[in-house]
Length: 194
Image (cartoon, rainbow, N blue to C red; front, side, top):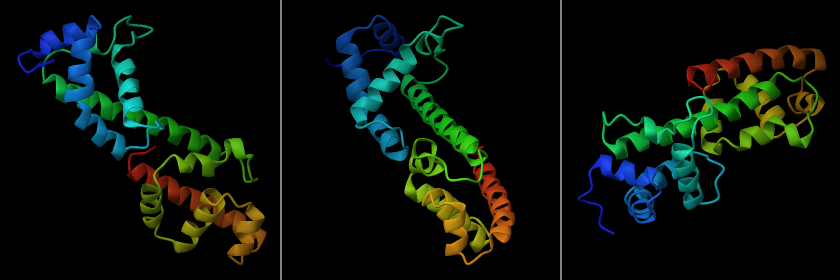
């Protein structure tokens, strides 16, 4: 189906009416490059780009619990539909990342003992791309603090194992660990992640 002659308003009306042909032509074909670029840019938890597109489709068409309107129904035609979808998609990915970082923060403050595998900070950090994590760690000015965070949370070592690796007494480790966590939080704040 050729939708090049359709206006944004006609496309929105067709999407809201669940018109399969327009949905496929616009959402899954015309917007595919936008979704593919975003899928490759962010860790979404989706297995494929198609799964990611389906998630965004549901996200913009699902009615809000309070407003009883979908995001697409709130589109005000102040910009192009494709640009609006790009913004909504990016915001969706940022919200996913923020939720992961909130979980990370909760686990980060949960205590100094090694956590179970199901709630380990290391697992939460795995949801951040390795490159992004290494970039954030590289910004820590104190190399020793960087190594504490790396061994303790990325490699999921216990406090004792981390102290032994870094040739530190446990008293020294607990003091430096607290300072390292604060320095890492500052990096996350600077990056706008918390």
